[in-house]
Picture 1 (cartoon, protein in one colour):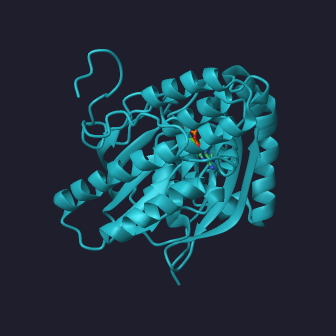
Picture 2 (picture 1 turned 30 degrees about the vertical axis):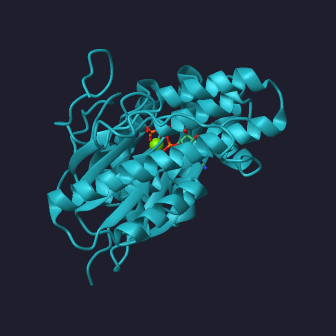
Picture 3 (picture 1 turned 120 degrees about the vertical axis):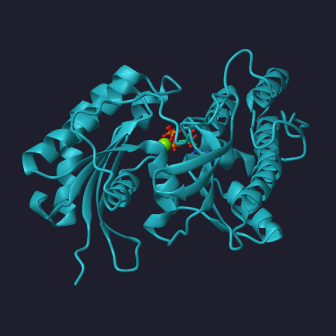
Length: 358
Ligand SMILES: Nc1ncnc2c1ncn2[C@@H]1O[C@H](COP(=O)(O)OP(=O)(O)OP(=O)(O)O)[C@@H](O)[C@H]1O
Ligand SMILES: [Mg+2]
């Protein structure tokens, strides 16, 4: 019988301290032996965003406990592992260093291969934990720090079709929630209060909707929300209308840009059965799911979303990316260091900052 590969994964790139033990099963998906996520939401709530030094200290305080818990729940021992994977970037260096260093120590101590995983590859491959994915597929990555369309050609092979030229989508949700004083983290709060509002009440801009191909922009929308927020004061009903209108505008932008990305993907790959994979924290949003499922039906492709527990940051996706990379012999040297910026497609143009031509 073929040996099933088992990995310990560790994730500390932002404000979640996470460890998981994952085993590849015969169907080519994952058996989740354990998946522990400790969120620091309450520690950062009063600041309305993640404070890097606080996050790093909290990772340091919790990491050993979280890894021990993940190992205990998995009911296996270190010697049963085939390797150890940790997020090596992109993210906050002080936070990444915590998980990366402890993962290296565990790998060295137990004499196992070590893999430094790109957090974005973790998101990109995450739906594969539960569903078999077929390369190439189209990925819409919508998270707290990134918003991108990519062709996932294989493990480690990505072609970027478009990206945000300013804010990430999760960031736009978080800032909108902050402006409307709806709570933290912003994405789930906006989704919750949008249900109580009229989504057609405010007319908001859809920046670069008819230009710049698959690239996106949310800064102008955020400014428009700020302008309206100042006008409506503390009127609850109007706040809910604004949250609903913001979310509705996002859905219209995503519908149009994803349609474009699907057409681009078709042209570039000539693939018939297209899988549209949507991953990252914002993929947990139910209205976005519904919107993109509708688009996929219209475009004759299949929309695939990770289970909500694998949308936000978790170590299951890091262990899973570790397994996939290990199978391609992409093992790393223990000397690799953390990276704050690490695009999946290294050839993609940098799309931010002054002088940008669209
Ligand atoms: N239901 C939801 N609707 C909209 N946004 C959501 C929802 N749930 C979570 N989010 C957003 O998802 C983001 C967190 O996602 P994730 O953990 O993948 O981001 P990150 O790890 O901080 O960034 P990155 O993965 O780009 O490095 C936050 O901005 C959060 O507000
Ligand atoms: Mg993330």
